[in-house]
Image (cartoon, helix red, strand yellow):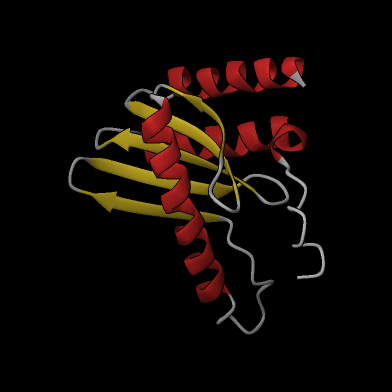
Amino acid sequence: MIQQRANMDWMLKDLAESVPQTRHVVVLSADGLRMGQYGTDTDTADRLSAACAGLQSLARAVAAEFPHGDGRMRLVVIEMGGGFFYLMAAGSHAYLAVLADEGVDAGLMGQRMRDLVARIGEHLSTPPRAGEQGA
């Protein structure tokens, strides 16, 4: 498990350093628990993870309104004063979140996030918590 965590940390660092203007990279579970981080302190990563739990739930509810869709959230992008926020599905019950300054190359960010999810999807997947299996 320690080796998997070290590999994930290295890959999060690679994402942050390969896309200029990247501020924070956080990996979180669907219920908002931080699983990994790069470029941020633990408190900030925990706050982002908690906020992302609500956001991904909201995105799933909106996705369910598409009659021919699969109801899954794939990517949420929010542009705000000062920068961008990205939230991408990254495996079963796991998500990748990135905060970036407004000068970020959005296309490059999306590509690097997709590449990262493909490379470490098995590290990002989390089993359901006890009691969720029947839900």
